[in-house]
Length: 202
Image 1: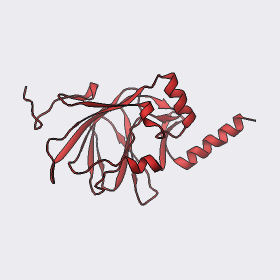
Image 2 (image 1 turned 120 degrees about the vertical axis):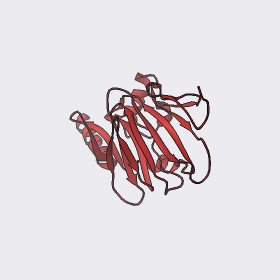
Image 3 (image 1 turned 180 degrees about the horizontal axis):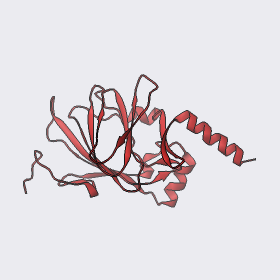
Image 4 (image 1 turned 135 degrees about the vertical axis):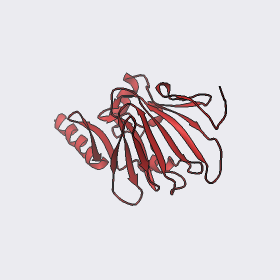
């Protein structure tokens, strides 16, 4: 078998690009990503720090005009009403766009731009393509009962800016309501949780 950055093979079921390392993210590494601290702590203990997602990336070449790509796999699961998801990021080079190709499973991509209050929820399913424009934060969410796998393709000089979202997080959440994924403003969702807790605690 040819071994070269110009030719790779992958195993979607294992989120593995042959010959390239797999980076694993467990729940303990995603503190403050999920909206409910209590639910996060309970899930962390009850499921013994579950694996949430893995990524295997390939950088065939560097420089203007080159492309990198990565294979992602998100496990099914929830923290409270929120589904398992990636940390999400902006690109360091904000102009950089990205293509996501759905391979297996059922999920969504949450898109937000920096300077507006918008939030878009785009399906990511097998044989689908999601275009993520520049200047857009993106997070991948598994809303199904099986692993969600996908391929992401992006400019070599895009970079990943996780720091901005580590401070502010996304302005929207995706939660299960009435058995279906629902997009809500984070502030509205937290207000709902507070109201429920006040009713439950006389």
